[in-house]
Length: 220
Length: 220
Image (cartoon, rainbow over all chains, first blue to last red; front, side, top):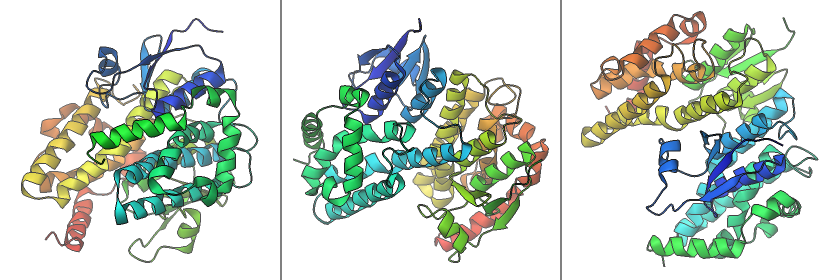
């Protein structure tokens, strides 16, 4: 389709990098994913491409870097317009951006509190996490996807984070399916898509990664 | 131009509400600003329109609410396309979004640490704040505005926050002009614009507001 050189600075378990991979796959853009060694040996290209945060993902299109995963997904949507991730309606776009931003601000941090906490703090973290997912379930409503019938912007922003849910469930002692059945059904629907099935890591591998993180943080 | 009913749920000193007012003014959109009483007596309309955060600004266009100021500015740009706040180039748009997001994540919180801190903590807060403004100065470079020759998206996101700088300078004992002369020159350029001059509050009024906040927080 294009002669673009598209490189993604990647880390397999990063839900933020997965957003970019799903978005590129949905657009049919060929790319090279370069796995970064984030524990103390980041590549020169990463440090040079994202000097402010020094984090993955970074998308390089013909050498030009784009950072911050939600911005990368917007960039992919605008650089390769078909199929679009957002409707043309300004109001609906603002609703999609609101929920994408809400997910960015709340979901991963709330999940992180679950595997970092114990006792009363863990109970609070669990309650907060479930409240966030319930709000998202409310935004989803009875629709197939956040934007309606078509897998789009908010779905791409949200679904990669769900690969960490199994780990949250194990450490929190709860089931998202019991708390938020409609959200859980949306997760299943998304997982039937090729782009999602291809790039979402096995939840048990994510769980093992979280166990390693807990050891590194002196929590086990 | 339009028969739209446009209402902004506002608070005079909120830099986030000011973003919306400048954006509407730049587009030539008539609107009604409704001042909210944020200290314990928020309007039913605010609570109903922004149930997730219950914060200003909220923009209502014909009754449909949009929340979160950066999303409001994007909505205004897409709902009233002329003059555009962003270039059509996907890469340049991603660069603008990166810096707007950086400002959202860093600048106001860093300033807040200055007026909330004392002693060593204040020194650290000041250092962090100046580093953030220096990064923005680097992004501005030798351009007139963040996007080049035209006042646009990042300028609208950034300039309202500068109305709090005088308060930060007084409590932090520094001058942005001495630390970041190019950024300071950009502030002056923006202040020459009608939309900015019309809606940016007097920095000494913001300072008085911050003094009141410090008293409320038991800091004076």
